[in-house]
Length: 146
Figure 1 (cartoon, rainbow, N blue to C red):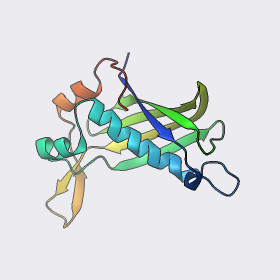
Figure 2: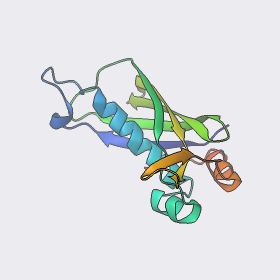
Figure 3: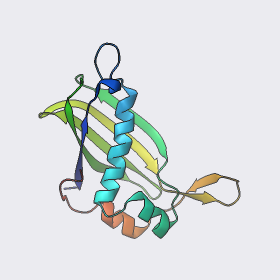
C-alpha cells in the first residue's frame, strides 16, 4: 500500500462564489498545499529539498479534477494525498477531498523534479528524481501529515 498523507482545510466565506459554494480554482490551490504537506510528511519539506538536492521545486505539468459534490463555508475538508505513477523525472499525485466521509472531489497532478538550467537565464529543466527521494515518497503508509 502506498503512503497516504491527510491535510485539512476549513472553507471560509471568501473561498466561495456568490452562490455560496467554493470557487473551483481554490481546489487547485489546496492541491498545492496538500502536495507540500505530503512531501513534508515524507521528511522532505521544500526548504530542505532545495538545500539538499538543488531542486527549484516541483513545477506542475498537468492538473485535473472531477467535482462530485459542492463545498460551502465552514465545511472542514479532508484531503487524502497519495503517490500515483512515478517516472524518472516526473510523478503523479492523487488528492481525494471529502467532508465527513462524503467524497467531494478527485484531483490529479503531474509534477516534474526541476533544477536550474544554466543554459537559460532563470530557466529550469527536468532532472532525475534522486533514489533517496523515491524511497521516501514511495514508502509505506504512515498516516497524517496535517
